[in-house]
Length: 67
Image (cartoon, rainbow, N blue to C red):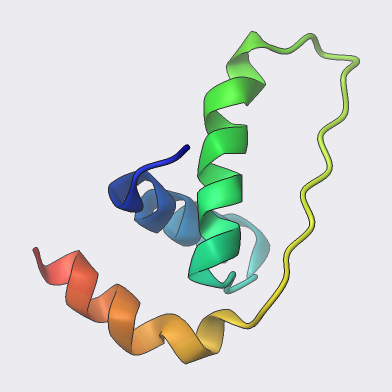
């Protein structure tokens, strides 16, 4: 399982690189995927289902980012 800090980092990565604002629940899945990806071969494919809306979490993300 990914930590909240890792999820916040994944939230930022996805927002900056893809223009997608993921929900915090999905951000945990992205964080775990980012941990696993370096161990995978180049021909392996990862699929992550993003559910929910990240815009509802913006105040929470801003508050968590302060600490």
